[in-house]
Length: 405
Ligand SMILES: Cc1ncc(COP(=O)(O)O)c(C=O)c1O
Image 1 (cartoon, rainbow, N blue to C red):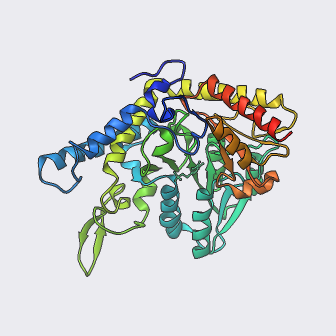
Image 2: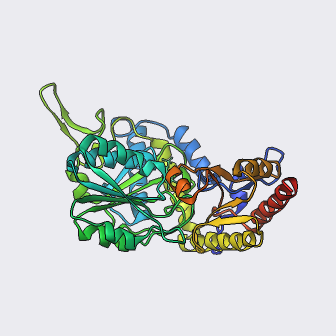
Image 3: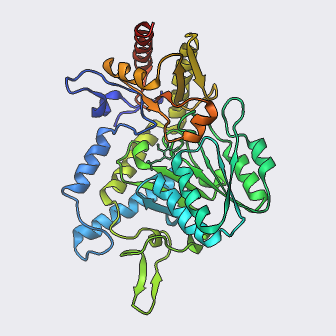
């Protein structure tokens, strides 16, 4: 495995970074989904091929081995985030993790008039599940505003706090702005009124060293596919005593202790939350992705991506028609707009230049409204990104400006 102490994985490890003719593709949409290193692709192929069998049920050797592999993946992910193995629930992705907490914890704990605090920059997946449970329980949602440099305003959060707040759910790193939350302070604030803190770690898990105990949150969600792993698998970490007290949210095989028509009892967490045949190969390949990322070192990775974001911001600052969003020290994600050019037009022209960026609302429509734009252009870096990607993007922007006069 390659991966140097400069925070980079070798581009050569990622077949997805090449066009079909073998030329380089400048992929700047890692915040949407990361390209996969060869070791992850191979782990998937092995798990779906010669190693494949179901887990938790089979009495034959292959199934027993697969069960060991699946549970070893749970332990690996627990180690990756500084949690305990029985606190790691495998889910389909961050969206499902947040829906699980909203549906299960929310149903058990929210009463009419209780309050849930979200921030203005949340991804729709950290808004809509809370709206759905608020509607069912009579809870109310409060929205925490942003600072002038587009961070979640924790002073404003402090002002919102009341004993009616039961849940504070915030992005650890914004998928649009790259702003990093002071998670420890958010935890202290939430806990000061007896609320729980759920962090949406989708954009933090791929680039920041995580330690659940040190963060002080109660729930943490992220998706495997943004962490250089496969789609279809993600992680919900929950504090053991909270998971243990939560009712199941989906029923089926694998989540039960005993079933009869008179009465069904449920397995302990985390199995209680994993109804049905799980995403076996995906979880095993995700553990390999965690190994790949850790071989590079997340502290190097964060420094590398933050430096690339700073370089891009400085270069974009040189264009007087460019408007930059987000803080100076954004974590590997840069959102911007060009006067007179719709982000979709920019994205299309850049595509002709072999550069892939994201253009749109990034599943954060309330944030777009607050920024006063329908959409932004977003360049996001991964461990394989380098200065050549920035140079290609800047060439594309110059060409776009020539086209639009
Ligand atoms: C901050 C954030 N939260 C949640 C999600 C949803 O992740 P998924 O679609 O993998 O469930 C994303 C994905 O874009 C994200 O960036």
